[in-house]
Amino acid sequence: MCLSHRHLPGLEASTLSLGEHLRICPQGYTCCTSEMEENLANRSRAELESALHDTSLALQATLAAQLRGVDDHFQQLLNESERSLQDAFPGAFGELYTQNAAAFRDLYAELRLYYRGAKLHLEETLAEFWARLLERLFRQLHPGLLLADDYLDCLGKQAEALRPFGDAPRDLRLRATRAFVAARAFVQGLGVAGDVVQKVAQVPLGPECSRAVMKLVYCAHCLGVPGARPCPDYCRNVLKGCLANQADLDAEWRNLLDSMVLITDKFWGPSGADSVIGSVHVWLAGAINALQDNKDTLTAKVIQGCGNPRVNPQSPAAEKQRWGKLALPEKPPTGTLEKLVSEAKAQLRNIQDFWISLPGTLCSEKMAMSTASDGRCWNGMAKGRYLPEVMGDGLANQINNPEVEVDITKPDMTIRQQIMQLKIMTNRLRGAYSGNDVDFQDSSDDSSGSGSGGGCPDDVCGRRVGKKSSSARTPLTHALPGLSEREGRKISGACRCQPRPLLLLLLPSLVLAVARPWGR
Image 1: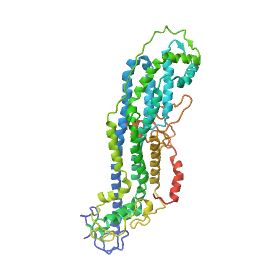
Image 2 (image 1 turned 90 degrees about the vertical axis):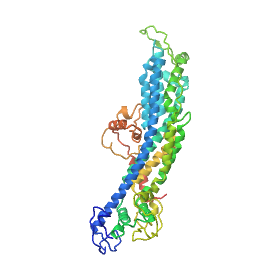
Image 3 (image 1 turned 30 degrees about the vertical axis):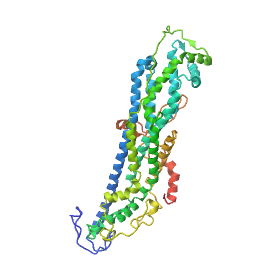
Image 4 (image 1 turned 30 degrees about the horizontal axis):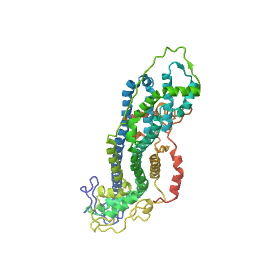
């Protein structure tokens, strides 16, 4: 049966010929011209690329849905904590709060920046907040005194020993840093995984792959046996060769997903992200309560260490001010995060073998593979059994692939870069599991900010970290998936930061990659 419009719409039928002109299909009797063979080769490549794109989009959608759910929950916890503070503090603390409301707003803004991925030292940020708050509140508690800057500096130097806010600063530092680093590492991990899938999906298929896929899918039509579907092992060998570089993502992909599942252990318990992030205002209330309780003792010790401050002669007669106290319970977990994490962990386990199962998935779902390996399937030459063994996964295992000529000494550099991104994120997750805030290297190789000549505005990408030092902060790159769509557009539009020269850091690894075969 010759090729016809019924089998392949859009291609002209041809008369039967010997087929010596064919370059890809077996040179038996054929109904394909050279032009038809070339068109079919282009079509087969486009169809496989489309199938890869569709499969990648489905995985990206899965990761994005998990990211949105967990990220929205963490941001909602922080927003609810700030709302609780704004509702309760004015009535309880009066001017002690209202005159310092901006300091509390700034703290929550810093916490959001940190969670979204800004290069911000959280412990130093908290320490600076307590120092500023102590100076402001001490002034308010002693309105009849002239407190010069050098006197306040002396107060600040003694603050750690005096513990003016009781245990609240230490408790918040220990619990909040672990909670926030675990939460943002998990969300960033989902973002990095989605970025890797997106970039790998854009890697083009090579010419040898195009020839092999053409032979797999359309040469049966050219030889007049369009009803013969590809043999299962034949299809797997073709796609294992075509997707050899993608399969080399497997080891680091699994490491990343395993680390993400592991770090969810840090979401639970009294120091877990679910309890702590929504209860920041509780420690702040306890701190102000402690300061009021310790006022007289604190003042005596400050005078002992720093001397008698001058009295303000222009100060009106100070009235005895009374401020209330506020007892707030920690916000109990609602169970929402537990459900979200349970779903996310199940999805992460389901996609662990994505890269090595890709050839089989595409053969089964997209390539019209035969369900049998008997003599009725297409083996690349004729209708019959396919005898060669199926190759292993990855580039190094394709050296003897009978269907696709693969140069195992030339790994795809885009995919090798993505393997490096997976390693970087996995190391960050492992550090976060141990409670360490590993510096998050910007792993985006997007050069959208290159050449812009501008850095980040201080009010978006960087804030003062210490009173006597400043620190440049990285743009919110891999944290952007953790922002709402509106916030992401706003910040990415405002913050055209110069990207870090990551390729310079990767260069030694990439050179070694080219110099040796890649295998597992």
